[in-house]
Length: 535
Image (cartoon, rainbow, N blue to C red; front, side, top):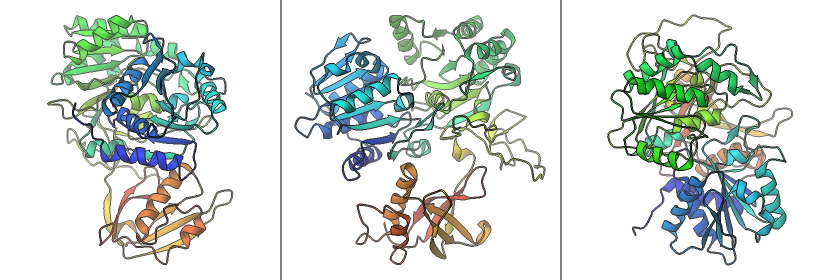
């Protein structure tokens, strides 16, 4: 068997996880890994390193049997002969006394106290465990594991570190792998977004919401109308003519059946998978779809997480959601590499791109908070979703009308991937200054002011926030690694704004910075720094 070598970003994710567990003394570590990043390999390498310590036992938790098998297979490839067991009713296995246990959350929850303590616990699709409801299954299991071993360490992995009910996951970030980074590195393909033709879009104005999400029954009634289905199916057939395979995400079981019937009536080989589909039939349909024997696969709420079919080159979202996690998971089904595939067409019939923004930078609405639609600009000629700054459509070249000037108007920027909306630019740095920034009720931060001149004005600022915790603290630490000369950098980091500010006299000023305008803001984001000498 050929040796499996991890990509540099996968190794960094594992390195930073152990750093958080060890040097930083954290119980939890979060790795944000989009579809296609190779979470299974990150999990396997984490387990391999953990097993180097005598007596360490590892538990891998997730909610689906397919993910358990996938993760277990990667570990066997990296560490042949590892003592692996599965505890899952869906797999028909209840193996308790193994050093590494891959377990379904529903199966193990009822018998959690029958196991010996674990030292390392890995939670795949961790956004499902992020609820603050203490009676939820994951919450009870995590509490029990901690009771059995208060020193247990937890690795949480997800492509979507946010929830509709709680917002962003409140966990220390070990490493975040960006969607655009994976596209740039050639590991994922870009998405091309079109708003579905008006004749196929549902009217959601009368659909009520509950818990921040559309009520399922009302949403399905809005979408499951023969004229809407016929129009949407016609467009999918037309625009997908040169695309190998299509996936449709329906708003309900009956809606899925009706969509499939319409495709079949047009001569398209189409199958349906819902929660009611028998397991054996479901496996057979998926195998046929991946083999190219089925042109269109329609599903309802079952192929959003852990489903990998690289052959898919068109996604039609014939449903609506307010969940950024669900939206991003659905979009990710089409970004995997496949021979002859250059991108994935994303047809949106539910206003999801306009509501939730970029797949690689979605709008996360906090519980109880309102929020308007995401910034978008739609070409009236071809329905491609473009950025606000476009003078012409990026797809068909049709001109956009000049914007009206209004002090009350919201600034809009769109597209389905952030880079399609805004390109970063390099600016030469002439000078810089640091200062403590204080805001009532907030921890102190350090304002780094870059004097660059030119069209951006005289100054571009970024804020280093070591006392804010989470991702903000990680960004501050990453910046300091670049600013400080190697002989002066402190590996233990800088815990306060005052400690960072004191390093100004010896810090290295970048020769230039890559800056990007932040959507709906007057501020700019410093994306990258370069120095005259190699860093």
